[in-house]
Image (cartoon, rainbow, N blue to C red; front, side, top):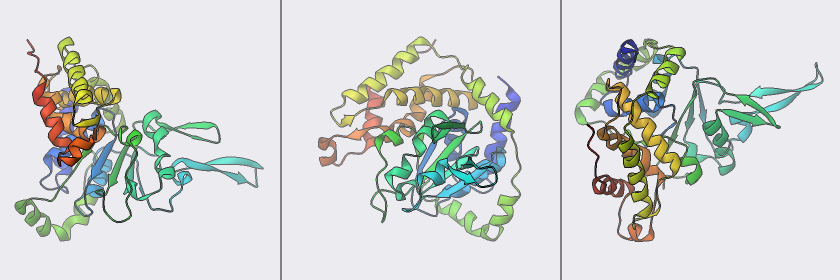
Length: 315
């Protein structure tokens, strides 16, 4: 592994901390997801820094960044692009949609129609868009950061399970603690200056190299069995109507490798998997009627599953 790249990833975190105060774990998780090549769901109330985080990432990682506000009248063509007739050439030409970038911020995704939401399915899974039967590849690397307001907020509708499953992790930024909020208030007048002064730490080629190196993290056979046991336990739980999908198991492995990578190790340990499992799995399960009646949460049940499966000993 390239120690210089690992050092740069730490520099990226320090640079982002100039504008995102008191959320080190969230920054770490987002960087791990990007190293793992996955997409990120940020679920939280407005005003806690979700958009600022996405913009800071784009600046420090040299990513071409586009943001789309998902409103009830947004159309699928706004996302994927569309064909337009050119009178000069007498031909139809492809006009790029908002996703033609490296980092696409889908702001308030759960405020738009299911038809427009579904326009992101191919984008997130295949890294391409198909318009009128012609497939157009997206730039590489490509990431989606989607934000959604908590369910029950005015004008929101639940994302389908098939779409949630395409997000590698789901995070909640939450309110800042008292000390961090005081710092934010003190720096309020300098926010614009801070954002414009963020330095580009990494190039696109370096990001792709990190992603490639993370795939080479060594995994003992017992850890594959451990991941499988965790997945099976979620599917057999009386508290869950549906457990974690096979795609979720793959995401857990990739995120575990990414955590090992940023920790400076070239091998995976069980603690890596347990650290990332809540952010990888909680949005991929569905509570049973019994769990809902008992007032249980996905986080509680995933935590119990993590405790119930015996952790392997790595020699």
